[in-house]
Image 1 (cartoon, helix red, strand yellow):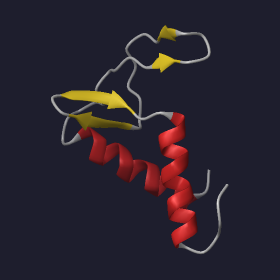
Image 2 (cartoon, one colour):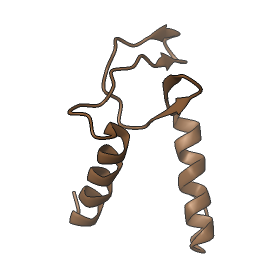
Image 3 (cartoon, rainbow, N blue to C red):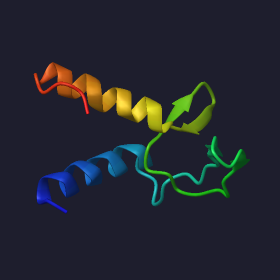
Length: 76
């Protein structure tokens, strides 16, 4: 893994943990298998009201595409 990517992922993890020792263990709906995962410390999560939720693949891909478009690189 390139050092730049490792740095970004470390910053994301630090921000999600919000000063806690570990990430929150959340369940994620798998649309392919149509089941909930066991509680896991997903890296990409956010607060939604009073709950924490795992970001969907589609949502993360949209964020990446927005960032690439803003940088003038187009979409993935």
